[in-house]
Figure 1 (tube, one colour):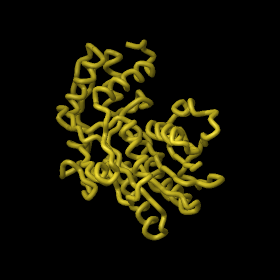
Figure 2 (cartoon, rainbow, N blue to C red):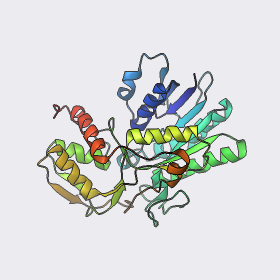
Figure 3 (cartoon, rainbow, N blue to C red):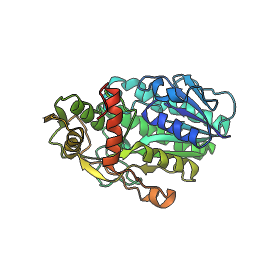
Figure 4 (tube, rainbow, N blue to C red):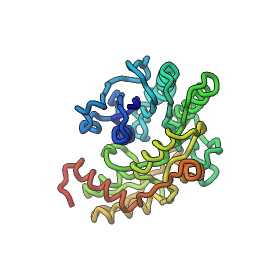
Length: 315
């Protein structure tokens, strides 16, 4: 059976990737330091012979005994609240963590897949965003610790590919949602959903006209799996191009939860992107991938999870 190391494997995306690779018959080594991940996310896999969990910080020297066929580097704070709380750790896991894990891939002869992000495009000046766009990033702004860490990680990944011949993949992940997101995550869907369920004001930044394109987690995981199995070594956007304003998304969630919450507006954070929409032509044509879960279905699934996470009875 093939064997894979997933760093950040106890996080939101990482844990769903653990599920997918276990289902595909792989042996999975999950590594996480639990800064933002939780062992609860992979508790259902504990005890399986093909799954192991290592509590470790990948910014240190990384060693895994035995063969590895692939490494997915997903360790990193990923929400604005998290990388503003852990700015140095975010920079280190994107730089030192990428160096340590891709070095392990080189030593093991393993395929390496980097979790990059749509944040490499910054506040984009082209719309939608194609992989060829170099971005509009403020390197000294409050979001720079995440944006530049991922941009550096992409550069290191390509350097190891070109200079050392490491077999690499890069996925640029657009906004994703689903079960196992943390209530206090701070991103739009967890914030709107928890506020609406608790009857609190639903807070929208700015006038709410800024857009995002949200992808359900199972769709994203399928795209990542296909990318790993492909021969594409340049970055690939994986996300749902169905664009929605933040105000419309807040209204959808208030209606879905049947909440009496009011929508209120707060100041727009510094460097908050005005638009975000992936061009998924490469993924569609070369991976045969496109999202299949409609937002209404995905939000309903996520709502069930958040009711449980908040200790509320089922609807």
